[in-house]
Length: 331
Ligand code: HEC
Image 1 (cartoon, rainbow, N blue to C red):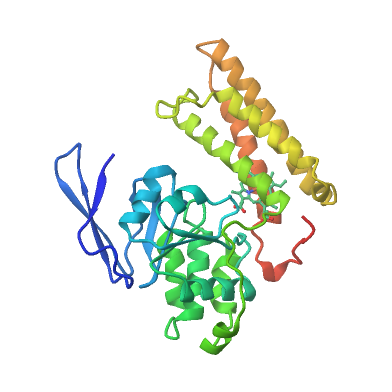
Image 2 (cartoon, protein in one colour):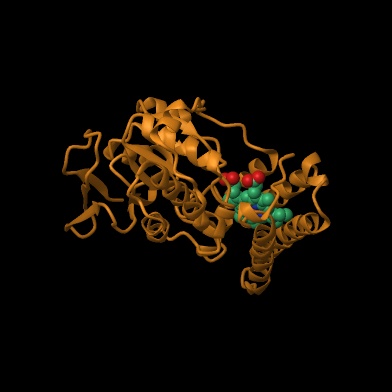
């Protein structure tokens, strides 16, 4: 693990550009990393896909553990703004004197109302501000683009879109890409007049909560897959069949939610497919463990089935631009 060192003053409220050095423990060579306007994403310990957005704003992935929060400290962050569905790690933030504000958004875009709230937060709260979703690739750069459109009179649609492109936002998220075009830039008086609560942990709808749990297990299974379907060396706590079992349980619990029972038949069918694929993955992993030389084909097949269930359901029920759907509000 490398340790970044800040060369410029980290406590300056206005960020111009920040230069960091990672002292290469393995190589013995100091590698300079710069976080600057228009620059490529950088990774720091426990903090991924970090990009410079403006003098007040940096975007990236969710801070992971002590290392992630230490990295935020190195960046001089005063306020953390989460647009993710997961519950913020308030304990670690408070320990370092950082304020958390939780204003979640979906993959379907940024509404005018959400954009105004986010813009007001970035305008009025202590800077530098770190905005994050889970991986820092889609929703946080999408939100950052909307914020820039609202706060910076000179920001063009192309410049806002560039924030998403630099972060690697998938073009499939058409709603996120549409937001800079569709937003109406507020006047400074309009923003000043807005009365907004800045919750440190927002109420999350049941389906989104279930998805955060499902995604957590999915991330574990992805790590296990990378380790050749064995227990990953740096995650000795992950037992492969048990992770698949947990995934299946989360699907099963989700299917029991009253709001899910009211959903259309294809939604429920994909949920069942996800559950069945997770069960098949568990069985295949147990079999592979028992028969030491077992082929991984079965395991790969079940993994692919699982992945397909996520992708198909999201394409219809999560990622469609909000302008094209009447969003289900009854979760
Ligand atoms: C049956 C449909 C369905 C399946 C299957 C499904 N999802 Fe989702 N997922 C959704 C919906 C709908 C949302 C949006 C929830 C909301 O914001 O209200 C969502 C949201 C998410 C989110 C965003 C959570 C947040 O932070 O708000 C993640 C991450 C996610 N899903 C991961 C996964 C993964 C990984 C899988 C497969 C292992 C999966 N999902 C399978 C329907 C599904």
